[in-house]
Length: 357
Image (cartoon, rainbow, N blue to C red; front, side):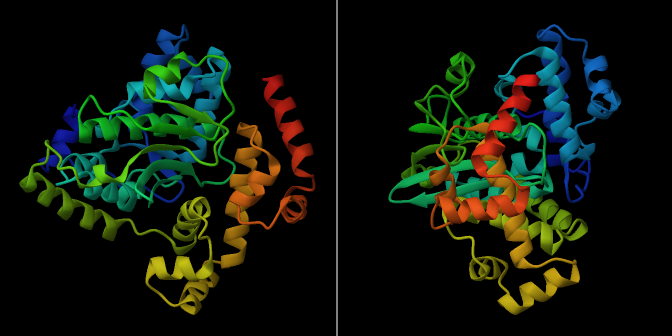
C-alpha cells in the first residue's frame, strides 16, 4: 500500500524534506495517535507531556530529533503500560512510510537491489539508526540498529523497525513470505502474541542483533511491483537529496561502525575502505569535526553495550565478544572506563530503574 504523500513524492508533486543529523522524519510516528486511542489514552495529552508538539505529527515530512522521538515512545510505554508498544507501532506502519526510500525499494528490479537501496539511502529518512544487511553461507540477515547516543526506548524503536523490515520483505516477495527465523536483541517478553502476529516465524530472544533471517537466494527474486520509469525518477530525486543534505564524517563513521560491530569488522581500515578514502584522510576529516576514529568507536561500543545490557539477558562474555573484545575482563575494564561501573552492576541498576517505571 502506497500513501497519497508517497505517491505525490513519486510523481514529483511534493519535495521530500532534508533530514539533519540526529533527526528522523515523523512519518512512522503519525500512526502513534491512533495507537494511543486504541490503548485508552488521549493522544494529544500524552504527546504533549513528552515535550512534542502534537501538530508536528500531522505532516509525515516533518522531522524531529531522534532522541525526542525516543522520549516520546518511552513516555507512551509508561502511560499505556504496554511494553509491546514498538511491535504494535511497527504493525501500523507501512514501508511507504519511509518516503522516497520506501518507494525506491518498492520499485527495485530485484530483492537484492531493493535491500541495497534501503541500506544505502535510509539516512535520507532516519539519521539515528542504521539498517543492516549481511550475507554469509547462503543466509541473509536484514536488521536495524540505533546508533544515536543515549536514545530512550531504543529497544522499542528497533523492534518497530524490525517489524517494518519484515513487512518490506513480504512486500517484495509476496504475502506468503515468512522469515526462516527472527533474531531479537531483547529479553523474552511475557506476552509473545503480538510478536507472533507481527512475524509469524520462529523467534530467538537475547540475540546479538535484531534481524529477519532468510535464504540469500531470495535476493535474486524479481520484484513484481517494480516500475522502471518510476525508479528512474526516484533515483534522480535521491541523488538531489544526497547533495542537499550531506552527512558529516563523524555521523557517517558512527553509522558505519554500528553495522561493522555487528558483522565483526569494526576497524579503521574497513571504515576507510567503505568511504573509499585512505585511513589518514579519514582521521584528518574526523579531526576537523573535533573527534577521532578511536573516540567514535568507543562511543558506539559504549552505546551498543548499554543497549544489550539493559534490554537483553545475553551473557556478558557474549556481549564482550560481539563488541570485539578478547573476553569479559577486557570488556569490563572498558565499560568501567565509560561508566564507572562493572557491566553486571550497571545492568542491575538499569533493571531497577526500569522496574521503578
